[in-house]
Length: 278
Ligand code: SAH
Image 1 (cartoon, rainbow, N blue to C red):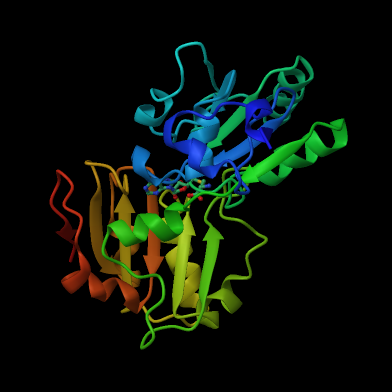
Image 2: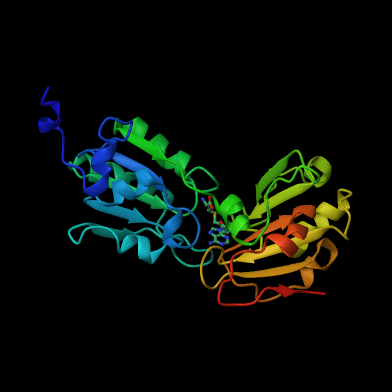
C-alpha cells in the first residue's frame, strides 16, 4: 500500500505506465536510443520518455531537430555528428564521453538515427560502457531501412515477392565499398537488398551485383530524406543506377521487386514529387 508515494513522478500520461516495464532514466546510466528515421514521430514511447528526463543528450546529425526540441530546457545537447567527408568526432571519443558523463552522475541519453544497432555503431558504444561498468539500456528504433521504405510506399516484404531481405552497407570505415561483403553471393541471395550509405558508390556496387549475376533490369528505388517533408524517391533499374547524380542524402537504396508496390501504396506525400528516372 502507498507504494506509489515513493515512486518517481512520471510526466502526464506516463503515470499510467507505473506498473508496466517502463523504467526511469536513472542518474549514472546511459540509454542508447533509436530516434527513428526522419521526422519526430517515429521514436518509441520509451525513447520519448527518456528524452524528457535526460540531463544530457548526445546526438547524431541524422536525428530530428524537432525531437531534440522536445527535451527539457535544462537538458544539455551535445552534437556528435558523423557525416561522410566532414571532420567528425572519433568514435572512441564519443564512447568515452558517454562513460565520463555517466560517471559524473548524469542521466545520459545517446540519441542515434534509425535503430542504434543498424549500421549505427551502437554496439561499439555499448561495449565501451559495459567495459567501464556503466549501466546502459538499448531502446531500439525504427530503422530507415524499414520505416523509411514504408514512407515511400515500399513494403520490405511482400508475400508474392520475397521471403528474405538483405541489409548491407555500401561504405566501410575507410569510406570505400566494403570488402567484407561477398558481392557475388549477395547478388542472388535474396530478391530484396536494402543498402545503407550506398549512394556514393552506387555505380560500382551495381556493377559488382551484376557481375555476380543480378539482372540489370531489376528495379531499384532510392529514398532520400525519408519520412521528412523533403522526402524524394528516385526509381530506376540496376543497370542505370550509376548514371544518377546529385542524389540528396541521407538516402536508402532498395533493389528488388517490392518497390513496384509504390504504384498503389505511396501514401505519404512529402513536399517534393517522386521521380521516375529512365
Ligand atoms: N542506424 C540508422 C542507419 C545509420 S547509417 C538506421 O537504422 O536507419 C546512415 C544511413 O542510414 C544513411 O547513409 C542512409 O543510408 C540511411 N538513412 C538514415 N536516415 C535516413 C533517412 N531519413 N532517409 C533515407 N535514408 C536514411
